[in-house]
Amino acid sequence: MVTKLWASGVAAGLLIFAAVAFAQEDRITFPIAELGNCTSKAECKVYCDAPENMSACVTFAEAHGLMTSEEAAIARKVGKEVGPGGCRGRECHTYCEDGANADECIAFAEKHDLIPKEELERAKKMIGKTGPGGCRGIECKKYCEDPAHMEECVNFAVENGFMSREEAALAKKMGNKPGPGGCKGEECRTYCNDPAHGEECLAFAEANGLMPPDEIERAKKMIGKTGPGGCKGEECRTYCDDPAHAEECTRFAVENGFMTEEEAGHARKMMGKPGPGGCKGEECKTYCDDPTHQEECTAFAIENGFISPEEAEHMRSAQNMTGPGGCRGEECRTYCDNPEHRDECLQFSAEHKRGDDRADRPRFEGGPAPCDSPESCRQLEEKCRANPESCMPAQAGSRGLGPRLESVEKEFSEQYIKIYEEERRSRMDEFRGMPGEHEGSWESKPYQPEGLMPMEAFRRPPGEGGAPMPLLPQDASEEERRVYEMNMERYQQFQNSDGFREGEQSQMPEQGVQTSQPVMMQPPEGFMPPAESSMMPQRTEEVHEEFQMQSPAPQSRVRPLSLVAAVVATISRLFGF
Image (cartoon, rainbow, N blue to C red; front, side):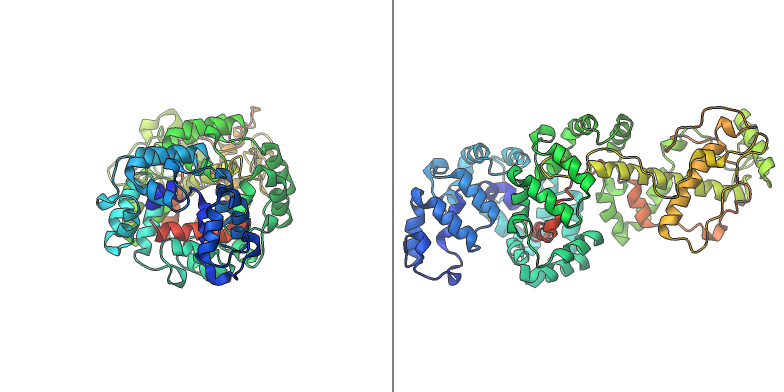
């Protein structure tokens, strides 16, 4: 990663057609009719060094696996033009490794759109600076391949924006462990691009937690298959980033179950439109990960209907939040997966879990005698509303609310946090894809799972209060439990509305998650809260989810057709700095 953005990120992109020097000549049979009937590596090199033969050489190299589609596309962009300083072929690599030529090489790469904008910006910031251990250019690759320097190189990458904390945590977790087939660094990219190694690479990614289980399953289905245009692996990313192939890639995604027809319709509307800052495809992920661009990306999301202004406000507030160890967003999941941080994460959660939704409420550490019936609970609630001080602790250390109501209150609190996060994630999933990636979901849709009860379902005739909430069957599925929790939240909202009180006719509260709750909560008629013993300590995974508040990085749902390439990218990041 460091090497890529340090020097070779510019140099390696220049005049890639030099790769037709047949590094894998064992797969080539001479003479080669397509290359002027050249009879040896040296003779063919002379042929391909001639600018007028560039197109034929690139086509041959791509067809025989000597260049990737991405490399071939870059070579065609450059065309017959010589590189910076008049260099040609491999000369450009040497020329651009010299720090004195950095400005010129970066300008050349920018002119020909050889590397993404965000990488250009980072490369410009590094001009005149040295890498870890004072290395420069190709020296950094050798320096960081030394296991003794791994920690230093990873820290350098994080400090300079080349790796996220999450990537760094994964890299440190892997330590000096080799990749699949014993590969290291860029070797892993080549190794896992070979379809013959697809299952091995996926098994490695699964065993080491490098990909989510659902992506692993989708990737397994694609093993041995080709993508649109016959692309394989990372070639598909380049192929589908080309606007000329957008319709073909979208159709392929629908046919293979990666997008619905509705999502494809939204994707077609956005085809050809750039994202914030003019980004396209993978660029948008990095662009919007940069804190300096988050306001611009949020505004873009609102303008294009990905999120509502209210959701944007929640995001802005959350962007300043940090979790245990200073982690943010997905970083917290990796951080809290480490057993060494478990106690810290649990303590942090206990101190912060109640958040803004309860900031204005008095915290009860004691108070009046507990209620023992729905009516007494209601009277106690009214009393505490009218005179909060009377509900304050009678003596330190006591909890006058009683275990039953305390358990209900705790359960509702946890349900609220969980439901709010699920709703936020559901909405933000629609902002994961950015233009150029042909994301399938382009507009915000309310989350309405099957079985979700409307507010009117809880209304009863005047004077009879609310309808009792049915009990959850013990053999309920995970989905049924999730819907039940959402119905409990709505039940609570109805109880706290004016329409619940003595049948008064008032406007029902707006459906959705509220940001404040009343002082007390009346348990539903017939509702039996879980036993104290069932209130287990908060799981670590719940702790991570609590801090997944930064806007998720845009990701494509078309690109799963090249999910094996996702393994390649992840592994190459971890084993090549």
